Amino acid sequence: MTLDPAAAPLEVDPLLDDPQTRIIVCCGSGGVGKTTTAAALGVRAAERGRKVVVLTIDPARRLAQSMGIDSLDNTPRQVKGVEGPGELHAMMLDMKRTFDEIVEAHADQDRARAILENPFYQSLSAGFAGTQEYMAMEKLGQLRARDEWDLIVVDTPPSRSALDFLDAPKRLGSFLDGKFIRLLMAPAKMGGRAGMKFLNVGMSMMTGTLGKLLGGQFLRDVQTFVAAMDTMFGGFRTRADATYRLLQAPGTAFLVVAAPERDALREAAYFVERLAAEGMPLAGLVLNRVHGSGAARLSAERARAAAENLEEGRIVDQAHGKNGVREAAAPAGSSPDAPQAPHTTDQLPHQEPESQSPEQPSVNQLTAGLLRLHAERMQVLKREQRTRDRFTALHPEVPVAEVGALPGDVHDLAGLRTIGDRLAGGSAATGAA
Image (tube, rainbow, N blue to C red; front, side):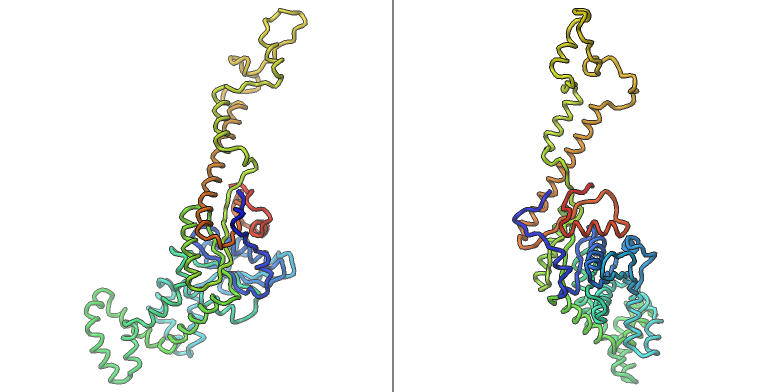
């Protein structure tokens, strides 16, 4: 499979080499290879001279394994074995630790301790809906503010919707500005007896019902948490807005990663439209795990027909040409100088060669099986091309890079280099499944 000439190819190396490119965000639906793509981009950029950090939010820890690191955590670790003038660092988001760092950095020691020990905070920081996406945004903002790396490559969270990463700052703002939070914050702002009176009156209407559903202790934990976090809420909103603007800045590039499958490309098309609506800079589409064939001129139909002919015995061994067949048909003993007929399985169907056991498939059977496998591969190629053409017809302005499928999983730097080569167009789509 080759790129449609109507679709502009995605030029990865100029993007990586441009010193103005400071952030690359790899996004897309789950299971399409975002983590591998992000790691491969990081390796390639480092070996071309950039100082790179790759931030992954992938719980499978494949990134650490492929880079030869025992484990990744919330601190960037340098990757050894990079062949080039640059540096490569990698880290994996620790959602709770990032939240703890924010609290410790923006609250005094006593208030920080009260927040960190609060049961509601511990539940919120460990798994509240949307917290992972927001913390990924926080960590990105922290890395960019340090200005220690030339390039930050972000592997977005594996969520049900690829849009969660973009929505996280707004969702946090809605949560912090919600009526429930404002009501819980009011007693802390009023203080003293007036605050307690307000709490008794204002909370009485909902504690009866919510207390039964959630428990009175839970509500008290929430109120205590909100009171302690009151002074920090504005900082959350400010940083979320700043990071969102950073994603819209010219130094950021989004790469939508997809597989050549209908659902993945439908999600990719939706994301492309959303990025355009939000004013996010889209660099292009990475079409991952594209299948190819070294015998693409042999169509699926012809391959199946040849396989059927072999299986039904309609193709005979003509290694000796027509002359050989004619001599084999001559009666034995018709001439003392007549050559002996070749003993082949096609001409003597009831005689088995001595070297072949009944259980072993014949050459014809093996060949027919290979032809059928090729026919299936060509069907896959046709389906992938048709799916990709639909995306290109909808979004002809989006540059595309096709990455050929590899025979196995990527588990080391060499494999990431191979992916990087294919991203850059070194080997478009000739890989095996």
